[in-house]
Length: 169
Image 1 (tube, helix red, strand yellow):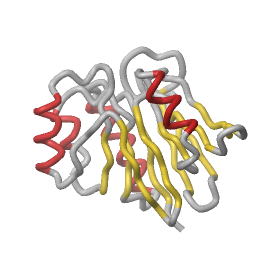
Image 2: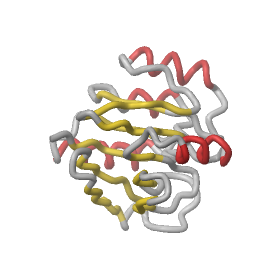
Image 3: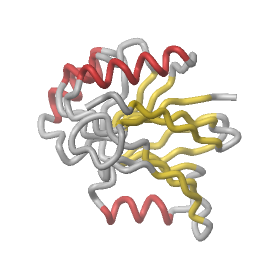
């Protein structure tokens, strides 16, 4: 059984990112997905020690610096979308700003889970038409339509738990 951490929209908010990563560590989570809007290499460096998958978000303008930082911590190169296979299940990852890309991934039928960010709103729903579990962990930075949050996914069971941080700005 593999449990992974999912977060998004850190928007260069190092303090909130550190708190979220500490919550993952407390739960013994070593594998993490970041759904974009990383914004700076300094945020990437906070993920050192995790097996992390990054994707670019619409606020990630310095791609070469983010790629260099990911390489420095042994992570794969961030892209607009990524595939991750865990316990025989495919997870699609994209930021969500490109609605066409998001729709193509949703409709592909390849993924058990699809992780996205962008809206800063939590999502945990099953799209029965395409057989995919749609996940948005919420945001750790940027605008705040909801409390700050991340989530934890038990990949095999498909069970999702949100971790909210109401004290964070």
